Length: 487
Ligand code: NAP
View 1 (cartoon, rainbow, N blue to C red):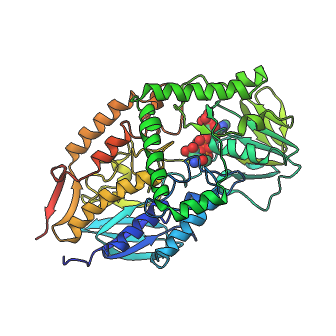
View 2 (view 1 turned 90 degrees about the vertical axis):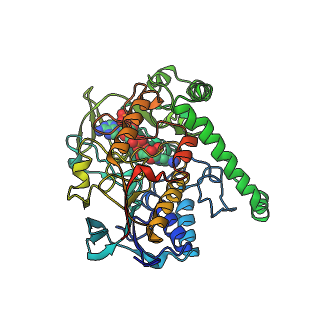
């Protein structure tokens, strides 16, 4: 292989795919093609358009490190602003023409040092490197509830919001009490006749004000870009050394503060004792992904809101029947029932070096070497792969940390120093044994059900501090890889 003739496929034009394409283009790494299954970029920020969508990671942290934005309107940005930002950054960095839309990767086969890639559009040729940037929030989960299809009103998943349906003056039901349901409830409560929120499990909610940036503040950011850098660094430090350390058992003081903050929010803002009891979780704050909302408790306390805690026995033409026999009549039903974060590339057939499929390799649970790559699947790299720090983190920071590491591996391939980068199975197993053991000390494993768990009961996040994540991915340890040197 001669330098620069490398071909790289990126799967997904969401935040991490956009970032990887920009950085590879900038480094003139070779030919880069981004395969995107939908008609537009933006990933979860393209798919989710529900009323009230706000990112609960502060705006000046939830951005690419290389693309500061002085114009964020608020402390926490609305989803539409983040989508526009992604589009602007992609256009500004000239990566649009690298994206093939309507192209869902259906098959990858490793053959003689390259990946043969097929999409629903057919054979796309051979690639030296494939980067999965598919994210975790793009497979909506539809609840398996008897009678769901028989509902005669309007019904949709929160990630497929039907903007042709009006909810003004209607009886609206929402199933779920995750971040999505909480944001929708707060946004629509004043417009609906009645809102019934079907709660299976109560959630801890942290209140955080979402102030608008004044025109002066935006001008100041524009004229003094170092202030945006300072804000980014300081927010990253606070989140990673406060919250992220707290949830993995490394900052008990911060965890206690989060717990107290949630309890105070509940005590101070829910005045009806019966409602307060229904909203009180029986597990520690942070066990399920923490919800950030300053508005939810006031919304759910309104006259036209009802928190339904009876189990759902079925869905009928006219509404939802609960186990107490009551029919909750509805015109519109929103399924705020989340996503399957464990699917990754499950819709594609991926055949590794020895002829085994990735789905077979992962049939007892997803695993990777340091979140990045899987033995027997050489030169296939994951951004946001198994056990990445997920939850109340800035995924953009996680993705950039992972990509910087992947890029170092790609450089070795591009320079011709190596032809294949394949983690050693024994090193990967040892790493994963440790990871599982350490997971026991995290708040996620402290006694609640959540989407962090896969179907084998493993927690799919990072059990150590973010500082350790950065350190582990700072430089590839080549002795951890089976490396075929180029002939
Ligand atoms: P989620 O957190 O997975 O919540 C799903 C909700 O649906 C849960 O309350 C769950 O109850 C309920 N549910 C699922 N199946 C059910 C069934 N069969 N019957 C009754 N209830 C059922 O989903 P999400 O709120 O859409 O959030 C998805 C991800 O996006 C999370 O990581 C979330 O934090 C993130 N998100 C982030 C933001 C942000 O601001 N950055 C905004 C929205 C979403 P149980 O708790 O009992 O399982």
